[in-house]
Image (cartoon, rainbow, N blue to C red; front, side, top):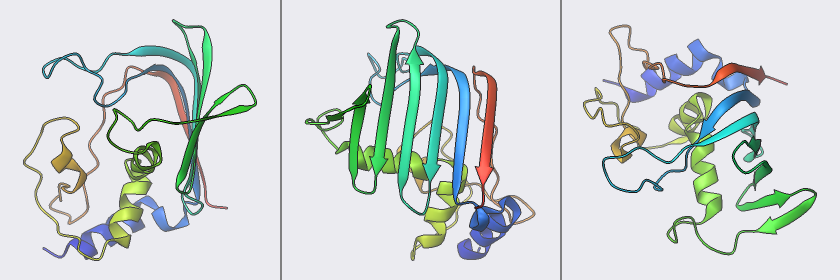
Length: 176
């Protein structure tokens, strides 16, 4: 199987090369990777309203704003290139620790860009060592899933529906 051709076909079908930025808006919950209490439970969830995630792929920029229902607070997370910070109102808040004391927040937020559908395709196109496989690892969010994707009979990458408990979910794509 030629992984490059499968990725290019998916990019064409999704219009990925024309997408410069994307914005997701919704209400529901957020959960942070690695914050589960044990290996068999899901991640602790925080109810949110007015969730907005804006990604500019070319600028490697992302901003996430949301209101936490339980805490009655507004959270803002920003990534600009290799720098990440949070906002408290109009005041930037530096991130002095690494996420889970292991990886820089900028790396985590760059990963979040790559995990968006268009971001994944753009990253795969930029890779020089892409290799396609039929996905066999069905564990949700398993690390292998980052480098493995299912390819259908039509030779296009298959995008599986992600279950979401969000309601009033909208997305906006810009090619300008």
